[in-house]
Picture 1 (spheres, rainbow, N blue to C red):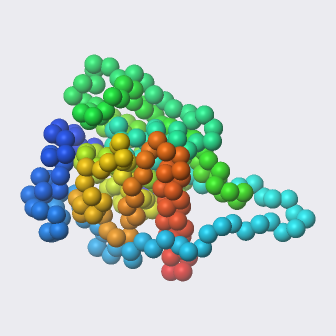
Picture 2: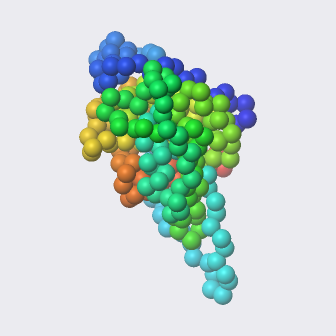
Picture 3: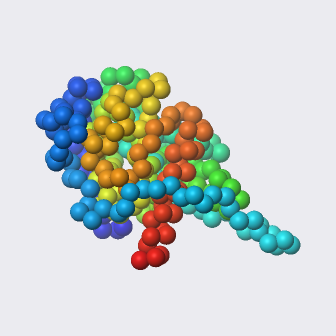
Length: 252
């Protein structure tokens, strides 16, 4: 993990959905290949992701005190203005720690939250929150900064994490490429969560998977960063993905 390079953050192109569509980016229609632009899935990709059928937690033996919950570190990553801070705040059982700063005119042309956004603040370090899943498991959530100039912090934030939720805006897919590339290089299990702004997506999930060039082993889910239950479901998929990876590694 220590040797993984920080994301190489390209300048986000302007132009909305048309500029970020698969056809515009790759010069071909959905369903054709091969994918060019972002590096494709690893040559020896793991088997397609299959959710585990085992649920629930084991109760402690009678007469013995319950052990404290196991702490699990999860990253909430993605591009600038995709909903990372909102995701952490929606699920955290404590008042989330945020490092929000007002955006100034110095950021014009550098930080582009998208034409639809009314965002006036930005994360300058990280977000932090936690949520207890059950008596045996507690998640500690670390939201990463999304701007180019804070990419150097990703190595430290990823240290010790068991998985990541990569938040994506379907109208600005280019913004999430650095995050996906980072976790692929790190070998860290991750889930791509498409944030449904106003309950709508600019592209279908199948088109998004094709445009991002992610393999079938990477779960792709739709969720609402403002809704606690929706965020919970997305994080449970991250946990299941991390458990699936740990199980395969133990059997290898």
